Length: 364
Image (cartoon, rainbow, N blue to C red; front, side):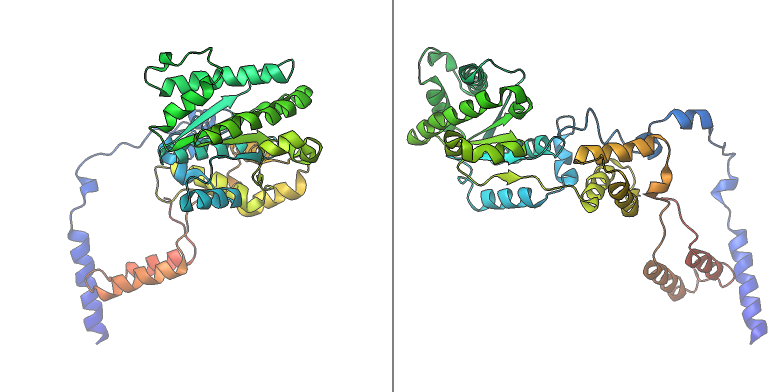
């Protein structure tokens, strides 16, 4: 019996070795490898990504293709809560104003970018009014806001020149015209919280927007407001009753960063931009060490910058690579070979399985 088995093994080995290999058909040149060139590559090029997954200043999604939004945005509780409310009733975002609360680098702009994208896809017009410079007083902020909003609305209205710019109700008429062809409008106020020396004037300005909001509601214009804010605004609400009248919905509060959240933000970006179906991933224990060790870091952007700094310094120990095949998958592979007697060559396949089980790794 042993002699027959050995004869069968020898026949199979001879059969396999007689199969011509395509590797013998031509001379394949070894690819050039230059340590100097590899050294000057950006970390994302060494990861074989399509492009830099954190372009620009890592502030918001403005430099990210919209087709990737669903893949890269980590939908924390604020996202889930507001999106669920809109899915059940898309009019719930109108006739009200939300304060979007978070410190600097807490993802408020990313939240606005994603929500704008989401609203546009359900036929609601998002308009962003960014405060680029401080104004001397409340009236200065009102005039600047009104002019910017009017210009944005006119872009959406056909023959908008028929609406006189000197008409005191020009914003109402323009909003009405837009709402005739759209479900409604959501106005995002961004970067007002960055003008800290003008905070009292900005509080008065926001309080005065309550008059516009109420007038829009009385004229059956579906318009809502979302304003980025720092935690101080929420604390000061009780001292400014008029502002609290404008912000008449519960504030949207961006959560504190956690190691798990930072890991998910980073890994989702890598997966979205990776050519490979099995992308590298940041190790959670490294992020946990950062949280314990680097007490000066406090927001999302700080932690992401810290990770990118390590990667730029070629610290690959913080990512899980190469890929290891799990035990359960190895068992499945072994069973597939065993069921096919032609494939199962006792002198070849079992040693390979043993090597894999001994945690020999396969590069993706």
